[in-house]
Image 1 (tube, rainbow, N blue to C red):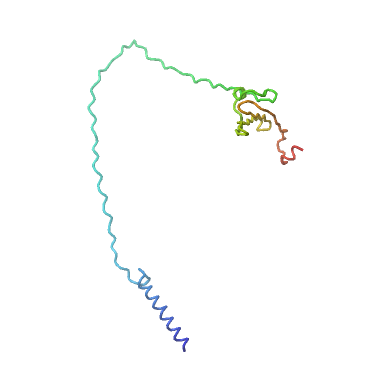
Image 2: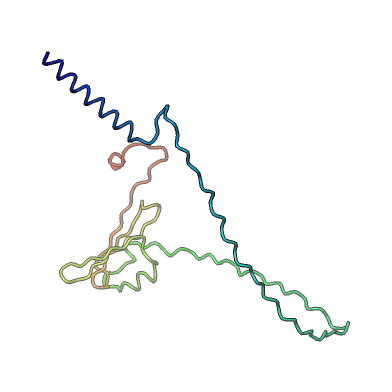
Length: 173
């Protein structure tokens, strides 16, 4: 009997909660829809009339007539400047780079390097320049200390036949 009373109270509370929720929500199936009137949008204000400026009347210029014996100017044809292809600078070999030569003479003779790095070691500025060709298979590395060549060495890699799929570590063995 006690359980029945508790169940009835819980049922009344749930029913009351559903009723309150039902009355507070705006629309439900089966309830009449309140008449709402949609206000038409206000018409946009008309743009101000555009006043166009009238051009000033032009003064008539005197007409100049030339004699029929005056020759017509001939059109001048300008030819395009020819494209000059310069040969690439020579590739530096270790034998061609003497120790103690200034940096400017190296870059003047062989051009700018493909790779350059500048560091400072023991209070000296050290620049490493790498000149490479054949997609990096042969390279000359020049070490410049305080603007002068300190050392140079070359490195070349054997040419790999096309289609070889072995790792690089196997190619040197």
